[in-house]
Amino acid sequence: MTSTDDFAVRVQSLSRSFRGTHALIDVSLQIPRGSVFGLVGLNGAGKTTLIQHLIGSMKALHGTVNVLGQDPTIRPEKLLARIGYMTEEDSLPKWMRIRDLISFCRTVYPTWSDSYATQLCDMFGLSTTAKLKSLSKGGRARVALLAAIAHRPELLILDEPSSGLDPIARADILEAIIRTVADEGRTVLFSSHLLEEIDRVCDHIALLHDGVLLESIPAATLPERYTECFYRTETASSRPPEIPGSFGGAGDTSEWSVLIDVENASSRPTVPSIESDGARWELVNQQPATVHRWFAGRVQRKPATTSSTSAEGMQHV
Ligand SMILES: Nc1ncnc2c1ncn2[C@@H]1O[C@H](COP(=O)(O)OP(=O)(O)OP(=O)(O)O)[C@@H](O)[C@H]1O
Image (cartoon, rainbow, N blue to C red; front, side, top):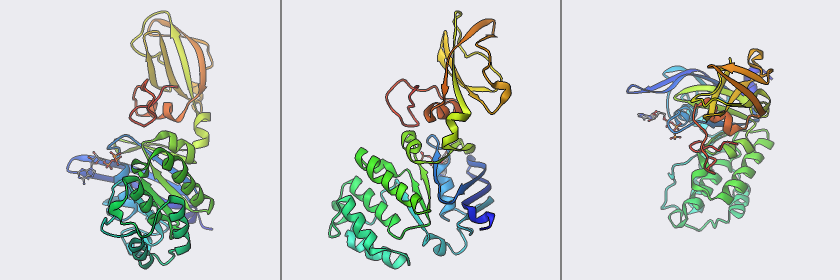
């Protein structure tokens, strides 16, 4: 196997602007084959723009994009036959019945499997005679998922697939699908606001922020790499203690936590007590960073105190 074969997706120095808005800035990333790759970022981070380049809807004007060994904009039909794609947009033709859509997909995808489609209909509780317009949003999302995977794509791209699905569908169906695809050695790119889902199913996480790829990291190494350190001071402070290499300060007055990259030896919290801004700070606790805390720290957002677990309202744990 050549090194090119090790990656389903290679993006090199990709930039994209829309009339002055920098949607992607010099993004380079590689998605290993067989991985479940999570793409996270706040609204407007550039996730969809990146995905549009991968499926050939947008041509790379600056930088290069290679998907399953080819430029997605050259012979796109060849590539699209090998990809499954599902977006949050409810774009299925509503006048069709499910069986019509299945017939259509059969003509488009040489590897379409009727038996797998039937199996998925049973699993999703879908009747093939049902008209798409008669289904709920969640029902149509299930049909979209079926249409994206029944040809057993080499690369499954899910752009915010959860928005139309209820919690049971999200937890059971989506997770089962993603794991099945990955277990078959296929690759999944999963873009979501729901960090909890990303954390549960992805083995690699990439964070886009304001068009910049801030980090791309194997999920298992994240808690080993980042430690959340909690500091306390007797003197009220409007900011966290200044520790070289730390980031993502969260807290108020006398208690703050910061994230430390433990791979950066100079920032390792070896001392239980430090002096900063004329105040003495005691290290009162430290723990591996959660995905939520890492995300909040990276995008410099103060973690919310609500129970929401989306990227817009992260829990401080
Ligand atoms: N066709 C377009 N014309 C103008 N601006 C665009 C266009 N497409 C995207 N943008 C802008 O580019 C930036 C990135 O948008 P994009 O949709 O890629 O982000 P996203 O991470 O997918 O956001 P969300 O999570 O809200 O879907 C945003 O500022 C958006 O307004």
